[in-house]
Amino acid sequence: TTRITKFDQRSDEFGSLARSFNQMAEQLENNITAHQRLLGDVSHELRSPLTRLQLAVALAEKNIGNDIEQQKHLNRCETEVERLDEMIADVLTLSRLEHNQTVFAADNTDLSALVTKVVNDCQYFATSKAVTIRLKAQENCVLLADSKLLSSAISNVVNNAVKYSPHDKVVSVELTQQNEQLMLSVSDQGSGVPNEMIAKLFTPFFRVADARDRSSGGTGLGLAIAQQAILFHQGEIIAQNQESSGLKVIITLPTLSKKNKSHT
Ligand code: ADP
Image 1: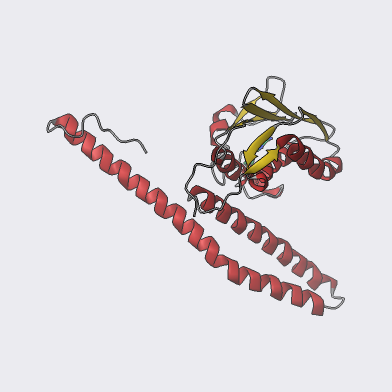
Image 2: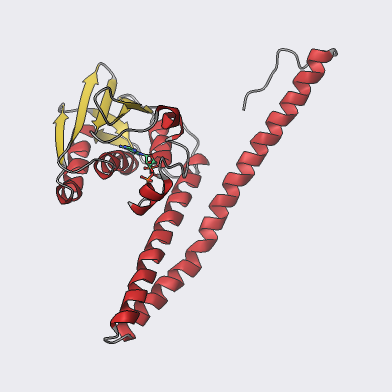
């Protein structure tokens, strides 16, 4: 939140207005922090019962025999439990990132190799949808990074491009380096995102079309986590609609990124 410091020492109307505004800003900030902490705590607490539930479902599956109807119900249980597990893990990851509670590794990371691996890992999913991923990566794009964190952020963006891509279309992934700036773009030929919603894409749980996007899996937290991960590397992530069609997500990262956040 932004504070007004220019007027808040004054004893006139501007001063009193500035002080009220600052109080409101402080309250808002406290509320947001409390809200984020609660989310983190709740997710943490949900972990143990969920693990027990997973065990119980696995046990029941072992003992169910050949009752197809019951097997169907149990499979459904299993899918939903997995989904819950994924959501809780994502909420925890986001909460930890937002509170600097993650221990970050910072190693010399070959982004060219990392992006190639992410694309390879996504190939199976792409093939299943008849989507072609075209990769053009400049070699030796090296930066200081937490490779696991960066990899999951990039993986989310590439997976989204495939997920929201119609059949028989192309997803283009391009990595280039200019001086000390690395640029990764991921473009698809899908329907893009309504312009007024572009700014909200990185908000936790935001989805363009709730029912459609929910049914295609995912938690609605992927891009929020990706943004936090990129910000940690002092980079930037933006999304824009392309003139032709589809969404283009651009990630820029400085090569000389240093660990400069407080860690616990
Ligand atoms: P999800 O798990 O729902 O994919 P994300 O945080 O990764 O969550 O993305 C948030 C929302 O942004 C998605 O639900 C979808 O509506 C929209 N979105 C993300 N990537 C694309 C894309 N390439 N094309 C169209 N919409 C997208």
